[in-house]
Length: 193
Image (cartoon, rainbow, N blue to C red):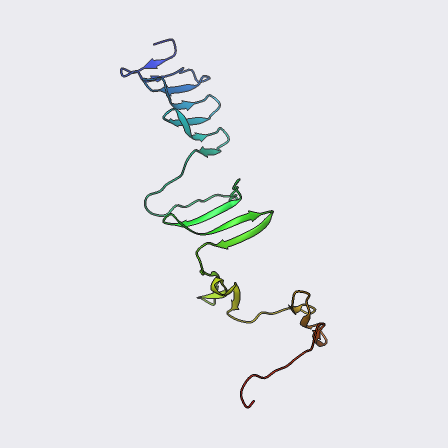
């Protein structure tokens, strides 16, 4: 082959070998297979199309999907993990079926349950036992079911109606029932009570 180049019997070649030069692997038809630059970048090709790259700063770029056919996949870093989705959606799937996503909607954070009537459940460990602390019931318009109390600090409370027409709160000294629209009706619906 030419100076500084190794050519195999089947036509595959490895390019310039000097430490200051690049290393290029080509197929017999001239398509790039692998490229190793002097500055530390490594590129791998499939059908002459770049599909995997490691830059000299350690950045990894992949064209296509990363698939692990068995077992778990662990991502372990010394610092933080950043997920940057240019499309605005982080899609969650199980065996190829989407069940939820985390989305950017005009800079609002949306947590979405995709499957019809399936809930969003917040779980935690209470004294060694896992509990459903809060369930948002999607089959009932998003009704919130708390496993325990809903506590409000002084000066904050419950506000009902589109215009906050009815309010219930405690200001640290006194408790208030405030009704600003219509009548305040207290009705016992139980029979004979």
